[in-house]
Image (cartoon, rainbow, N blue to C red; front, side):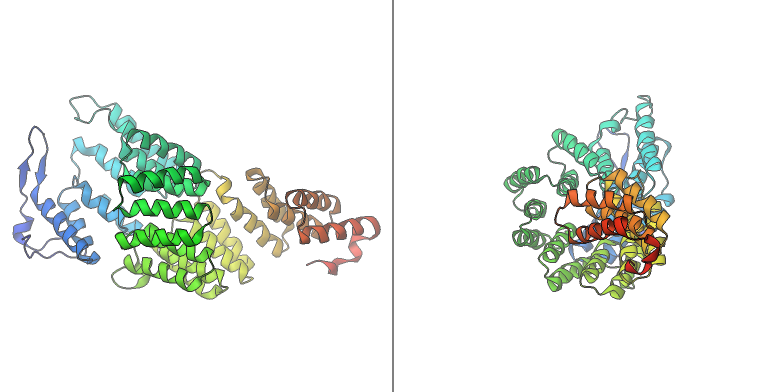
Length: 461
């Protein structure tokens, strides 16, 4: 019914008939519907229903190029991970907007630029709100509406989640869902933030309401899976994640949740199967490493690392870096696997790259990375640098056993027994039966009381 037009990988339509721009007037609106864009979008939907993601992607690109106002086509490209970060930027820069549609260009930029630095992204959100608020009624029919627009707020919440600002994300999604309880994209982000914060009560209420209102939507059963995962009932969790994927086979979050649940149960083969299925559902068009979504690849690497297959883990982390070079979590995992392989200089480089790639100001989410960097410096016997990063980690979290233990051990290696003893005590205050700290505290007390520190360099390493 839609014809036999052809489209190339860059969204260029070869059929002359399709290239003729046709419009349909909308009742009581200044804008018109671009029929060519609408047909391209419908073709994309049809190919996606046939599970031909390659053709669907090309037709969605053609729809956006034919009419930048075809927001649904761009939404499908972004939400279904059909474009790499570079392809998203390239597509956006190729679009031609009218003067009165400048706000939409800014909104599109906010949609795809979630890995930029905090000040850059926040400035884009603020500019979009100010630009719209400062418009006069003659400029645009949308005057003053974007400041509290639910789509813009959902986009900002997703940005907070990607940055590890889970409390900010949770507060914003809670506010948004009070305004619009049926905003399902925001609901997914809200569930993810609640998971990170351990909000089991909120997850329970959300799951009950979603199952009651949307029993046929995968998001509802995904919420149930999140609740059980949060309360550490992993077997029930993976069953509901599995139910969500049976309702919609391309629901990426449920595949990853299912893999995480199996990994928590230490069922490595099943976890790997779930991650590989997720990777296969979002493939590139030439080789596996051209996948448009890096998360399945990243989780496969994590599972290999859990089973001590460090070389394989490193390969998958490098593939994930190729797909998305702006995600600091990828660099962190590369640092961890390098540390396990005793390549400490390489580990230091990756951990420093992680900290340099964090888009927001430092928060408790990245405290383990700082501690890992300190461990790597300690292994290299660069004790001053190690102490500096241990102390920096303590400014973010004062309840970390590994930080106090690492700091105490570093002071111990330096021969600074007084500081070592103090920090061993702090570590044992957190966990009174920690064997390492108990033994090292005893040794440090003995050395401080009876031994010359310079006479026993071989006791510690």
